[in-house]
Structure formats: C-alpha cells, structure tokens
Length: 222
Ligand code: ZN
Image (cartoon, rainbow, N blue to C red):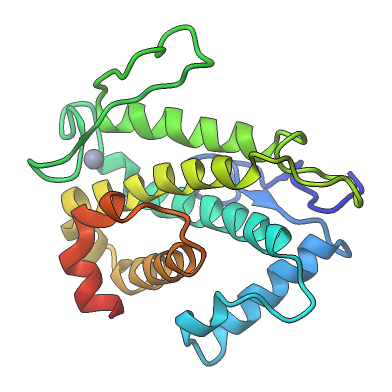
C-alpha cells in the first residue's frame, strides 16, 4: 500500500518469532526513512538519550508515530521470547509484583466495558490486539501524505505507550530470570532504555505509571 507508513504489511508469523505479527514500514516512504534513521543511530554509537531527540526538519507527530510502531514491534518480539513461560497458571493476574495489578478495560468492546482482572497472557494478548488496531486506524495514524493527525492524537499515543509499558513491568518483575536464562537481558535492557528515554523526552507516560520499575530505572537510566 502506498502512503506514509506502509503499516499494512506483515511478516508472516512463521518467519519471525513474535507474539503478534510484526509491522513493517514500506520502503521508499517517509516513515521508512525515519524508521531507518532511528534504527541506524541505535546500532552505532548508542547514546539512547540523544537518539530520541527530534531530528531537525522532522515533524514531531511523524517521529512519534514511527517510534510507537517500532516499540510495538519490539515489545511484541520481547514478549514473544518469553510467552511460553507466561501462562494462565504461572501468571493468574496481570501484575507487576504484589503492589501493582492491572485490569483490562476497553470501552469499545462488549466484554470489558468495566475494568476486569485477567490472567497476564490474556491481558497482554488483548493489549497487543488493541494497540495494533489503533496503529492501523487511519483516523488516528493517517496513512496518506498531507492528511493531518487528529486532535486527540497525543492522547491516544499516551494511552498506547502507557499500556505497552505494562508489558515491560510484567516481564521484568515476573520473567526476569527467564530473560537472563535466554540471554535476552542486554537486548531487553536496551529496548527498555530507549522506550524510557523516549516517553520521558516527550512526556508521554505519567510518572505514576513508571513507578513499578522506578528503582530499576534509576539504576539503569539515570
Ligand atoms: Zn507472566
């Protein structure tokens, strides 16, 4: 599909081990170039605090859109690596330790109009489906060049990133040993730092939502 993002292309689920199908940017589009730019700076020098800054001449909303999709893909991959260890038996609630428990609520759905406690894998599955439906919604993430972003764009982005952050919370607090055993720790830490610096730079996740991982974040990012 021609357009700004090329959101519609997926890798097949068999080719890449992800929890949900990965989103891909279409080559030759503005979004693809921004995505390349963001990733190139990631693999070279790595000052993650620097790479989240908006490049001169770029549009902030586009920059944010590219990152939202990239973070969705990475968190999807990250959860995919441990999802066989996160079952309805091991994780009966979507928690981040004893102090934090998230309940799923989606006012657009019939089933979860009110906050509902769910096992973590069920919650995360609904969460990823929801994020995917949002980033595929052209009314929120316009595909055609020249179509402006909606007025509530940042509001939606904040909700999206806040929910994605909860996957980090659950994975770090409940599945950290598995990450270490799989040798995925360094990779996940880099992904987390990138996400953290990004949402802090643009104030996209409330401080209270970052609280469950505050101590770890202080050690890792400050
Ligand atoms: Zn779990």
